Length: 434
Image (cartoon, rainbow, N blue to C red; front, side, top):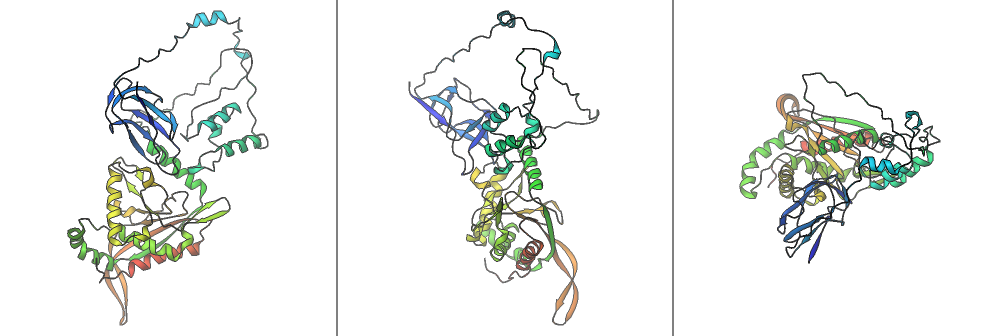
C-alpha cells in the first residue's frame, strides 16, 4: 500500500512548532491534493495545512491541542485507496479487578503527604514539552512556573531558564514540595469555589489570539520601561497634496493612496537619520538592525490586532509602499497572511487616528525598542509664521506619540526622532509628482 506522510510545514525562520487546533478530516475520509486537512496555530499566525496528494486518510498522528515540531509527520495518507482498520486499544481493566490485584491500602486521608502539582496555567503561557518535563521532575507546579522569567522569544521559558531556576530555587527561599509518599492513598484536592460575577453578566472566554496579545502586552510592559514623547504636527501640505492626487493615483496605479504609506515613508527617513532607534536588546548587547522593517498594526474584524511587516521599507518608493500597505492590510483582514509576513519587524507604527483618537501611548512590540502612534488629522486654528509676521489660520493638525524603551533610548534620542518624523511630514513637497 502506497502511503504519504503529511509533514508539518516550515512556517517561518523563527517558527519551530505549531499547535494542532482543528482536524478538518477524520481517519477513513477521502481527500484531494491541496484540500485543507488541518488547522494549525503558531504564536505568529493561524493557517491551514493542505494535503500533499489524493487519497484516503489512514492515520492522524496528532490530536487537537498537541504541539508538533516543524517537519514532523502529523498524518498518513494512502494514495491507492486502501484503508487500514484502526487498531483497538486494549480495554481498561475494571476498577474493582485492579483493586483486587493491589495489596491492602490504608484509607486514612492523613497518610497523603505528597503535593498535588497543578498542570493548568492560569496565564495560558506557552511551555515546551521539555520545560514541562523538567518542571514535573522537580515538583514545580505550573503556577510556580508562571513566575519564572523567560529569555526566549516573546518571554518564553527556555531549558536554560528552568535549569537556572531549579539551581537557585532553594537559595531564593522557595522550597521544593515534600517527597511523594510511597503509600498509595486518596489524594486530597482543595476545591476552589467558583467566582461569582452576579446575575446580569455575560462571561466570554478569550480566544487564542486575544490570549497571545494579552501575554505579549504584559511581557512588554514587564520588560521595557516605557517613556512616551509627543509632538503636534502641521500636515496641511501633505493633506492638500494627497487630496489633489488620490484620484489620479487610483486611476494610474489601481490602488488607493491612504495616509499610511506617507507616514511610513517619513518614519523610514527618520530611522536613517537616527539608526539607534532601529535596535533590539539582548542582555547587555544592543543589536543594531541594518534592515528597516516597518510593522503596521492592523485591527481585524474580530477586534484582535495583528502587525504585518513591510520588509526593507526603505527600498520602496511611495507607489511601492502604497501597494504593499494595501496588500498586507487586505490579506490581514482576510486571515491570509503567512508567518513570515508578521515577523522580523524592527520598528512599528500604529494608527490610532483610524478610530478618531487624537493621540495614544502605544506599547512596544517586543523585541523592538520603539513604536509610534499617529493620531487623527483635525482642522484647528493655528499660528502661522510668515516673513511679514504671525497670523492665524485653519490648519490640518495631528499628534505623533512615540513610546520607547528607556533602557536603551533616552529622551534626547526618543524626542529627537519623533520631532524629525514631524519635520518630514511638515516639509512635504506640494509639487511632488506621483
